[in-house]
Image 1: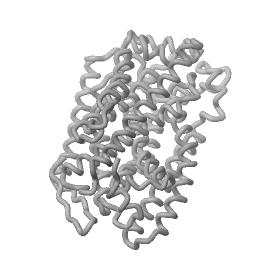
Image 2: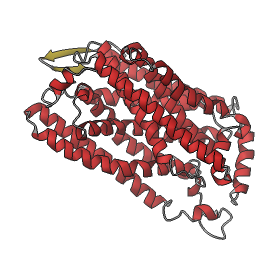
Image 3: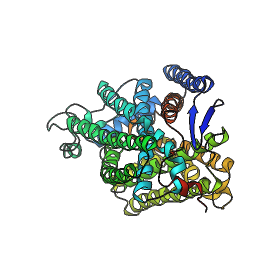
Image 4: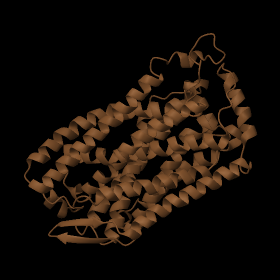
Length: 440
């Protein structure tokens, strides 16, 4: 990130994103495009491809599900469609956590987090483009139904060659019209509440008083109820329906845990970068300590949900449940096995061991390393959720990393733009003084 300049007026300070910073963000996007093009070329040349294995797996998949074999798009196009969905679900979920975190602080009457409040507001800048991209990619899925098997023509029509009795039984929930309605409704509500809290926050900056704070508490309480329901259903829709036959009653919690710890890591990383650039003079090691405790605790929570889901399925050993982990542990010639174990190391063992001590949670360099590791690790966690159910053995990383870089650069542009639109310190927040004098 390029050097940023700022101005101060008492406790107010404003972020100015320099041309150098903008060039860096554009460089990330351009690098992503270059990596994406390279990945497509290599896929066309058959380098690093497992297409034959994938075709065999697809044929077996079709036979096992009682349907006809579905060849789908060319591997490179299919990987682009799947990766667009994968990255958008990850970035949209992390973006929403900015509002969730802020709403929790409001209803809990928490004062310590006021100094990072504007970062939470900026994090949610991806929600609107996230909705647009999600609608577009869901439409692209209908080119060859590469992403969602349940959208295959005739799959819910008895007597059709593609008929699948299990999927047909889910027709009331998994149908395109109802699916899109849920998508627009959920993201529309998240966007509405995010904008409402942002407007109240900006009005509080201009006018002062406590009325905006109390209104924000009411809005936050309503949002958290809406989010608690919609985020779980969104996890079923956007992630679990990729593996249409499989289901887990804990999956909503699992996806939320991954989004949640990634969102906290993103807020912490942003706070550290701003602090190192000369911003957030009120941010102290005590604030970082609390953010570090959140990262430490919820990395353990993610692992708890992961283990609970895995252990119950492993112990019951029911074929319709175990297939999900069989694909990821040894399936497709073991292509996902190393990712399966690496997922546990980077998302649990690494943050657990590094952040175990009090001092580590107060050191910017340690937190910075852990936050980057967690963001990469949970991006990989979502990769593991999507790829075995869509790409089978024909997975890869070059195209996927290229698209991830494009999303990252675009996300940073929107986030810093929103961050620069208001004072980094909410100067009239009733709990600002408490946050300034916060100690742990």
